[in-house]
Length: 459
Ligand code: F6P
Image (cartoon, rainbow, N blue to C red; front, side, top):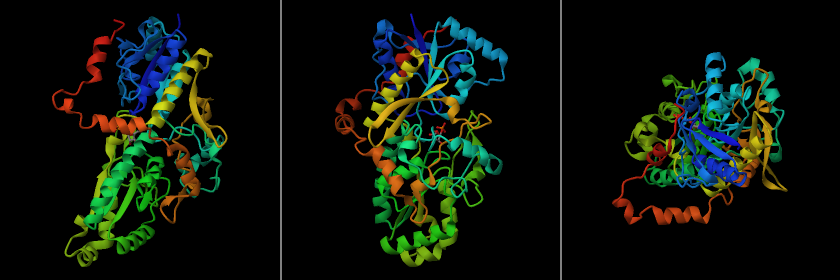
């Protein structure tokens, strides 16, 4: 009997359950048992290896539904350190006791790194997820160019580097889009539209900070909310030009809406908000405060007088306000695009393991002729010569630096992903569910409670 394990690692996305569901449904069809490991790699670092059987008798457990956000398995940013030989042999032993023949890791770049040491003795494949849409390459050879750049800028290549190709073909993109991104954009766009009307009424400048770490795909996608200015981490801030454009817009429409990616940098490559730099348990910088620092910079540049004359005695501090869309971008139900493709990628990951693949990623590709289709890629294709996986950045040809907006190619990319991304069933879910009277008399039913009852351990 074949038995596979599955886990979700890194930050969650709304499409994780959909990926698990796709994998389990495919496993049912192939008569493969699926075991879910609890809390990502933390689950196999725990000698008890808490796990859940996801398809007893090859029938998916009812708690697993593709339209529920988050992950019923729980996620963590705990990763495995390949240097610890004793831990590796313990993990090997645990996987043998669990009687699994392969593992699907659902995650992003951090997860590939976490999975790498396991691949040396155990077949593992990755089903991609990340709201940041930064897992993949703009074109296959990009990682080798990053490698050459490494000496200059430790792989954090920014726009304007001589090696950057001036343009790319959309069908060259490796792992075109990751499940979670479309839903994050959906949430961001709603947020912008709501902030817009209040900024407009009160003649204010709104700075809306969105997630994405070093990659600007979420801010780029925010263009659907029609913000006046979009700032992406790949394009270092030019404060003079920004001030000029804000003033122009403020004179014209008496308010301005700015979207800023949380990883935005100044001309020296310093992250805005870096004064309060902190790290998560996996050693990633916690991006915090880009919008607030941008506000302070603008307050200084414009000063109280500017707003005093235009807004009758209001200070710059009250005329400019910041809001973070925050974790709402990562939560709630996945919209149709994410749900559908996440299910497909989960199924593809099972097929890859069945084919005997190891250290491989299930990918979602796009071409003008075929539209979206599934493929796969050796994980090492994403690594530079030191073995490092870099986040995919927004390609310079996707962004119009002068207008602070997506370029024509950037818009074409967004259209290919987001046109039709919302299903009628998504709208119906909001209509039927939001003010359902029963919600007032029942408490929230956490999936964690139901899953807890199903958890088994090795010891
Ligand atoms: O990588 C996904 C992401 O949501 C980033 O966009 C964000 O910076 C980070 O995770 C936040 O992580 P956490 O919720 O662990 O603070």
